[in-house]
Image (tube, rainbow, N blue to C red; front, side):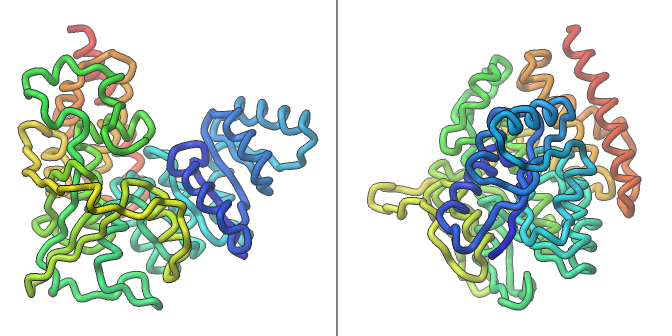
Length: 396
């Protein structure tokens, strides 16, 4: 029986993970669930799955959850704060950690899981974007297993020759390139001049996937794909010039690996995150995920197009940050988080998101990213710079 901790259990990945887990009660038990402020949602999950521990990042929310559990007569330990997230990620009582907290808040508990040799199902892009070298070093030194839940990276991973005894067992000299597919988001067919008028409601309405607000906006700007380029660089040890992005509006091919002999391996499936979740939970086995079989006849056609940097400047900025190296990707991520939140609060325009990030990349100097302290310092400086820039744009 595998004990599972889910960081971000009330988000879309967390909900999908619980759906897969409940299909296999003989294999998995929920040890801990964690959320930020969604008290009622976490309460409902606690009542259904009866974890040993429930954690809320927000202390006030944790108090409310504790009161409601007591009223329901349910004895579940309730903790709060970042240290609590690190504890449930590193305890001997958990075997698998699903890292699905959105944003920089997921970094420290993911590192804690790596340092204690867990199987980490990584759905938090920012952990690798902010501290790729550091996280991968901790994974290797502590014999942790880091498996990608992002549909694109999971697809790449499935298309590479992976040995059962090792996480990645391949000679990348045989690989010509990695091809990340992107739906292009809700504005892929808009005139570029019209993007300034995009509203938050339009930006979070993704055509293919059901996701949270922040990741939906990232998909609309293609920063989501830019972060995935950075992730792929660290996960698979691939140089930036071997990682390409193509638009594929149907989201059926989730990514591809192009080999030197002319073979291109693609992983296909319906756009449902339960597939990569089930794949990483059970690897090297395969289990039922609840996802309907792919009907290629019904799909009808598969379309591809160039990912245009003029239409998607955030994608270009991600490549730029990765080329600069060091803390530049942490700076990129922090600026993006601030800018997206300002857009969702209707303080800046949709097209201002890229402007804020570009300004912060220019104004905050990158340093080496050898330590957590350097990374967190860069993150702090970038957030401060981004907040100043959003205020300037807001006043215009």
